Image (cartoon, rainbow, N blue to C red; front, side, top):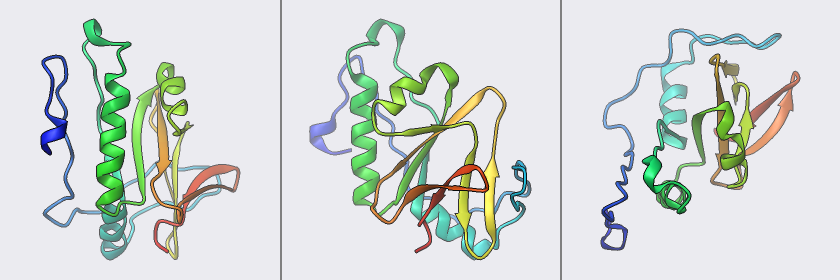
Length: 156
């Protein structure tokens, strides 16, 4: 952690790092109507992990909400991952948090869909959750494929 990013008593920042071991591709995926899903080749999966980062959880203690802490956390994380060469940031959030993320430039989606040429469209949905996506690089865009908002340009 850089010196200018020291936690204050009311803030704890956790930063993810790129994986040190080669991850295994997912064995299953949710199905979107008309979309191909399944296992991605291991090389493709490693490339994807090198270009997309995922935030697992952002939480601010109720006594400290409304002070911009979560926004500052997101700003720092986005900056760090952009500088590290990641092309997109994703996270899973509760339906009620949609406005928070969209106000910060994220697109909130009911299903995460990624175009992985030549494999096809990988999709994932989880009941009760939405996915927020933010491109960190101009090569990444959100387009509609087969009626599903899809992240494209990750492998270019």
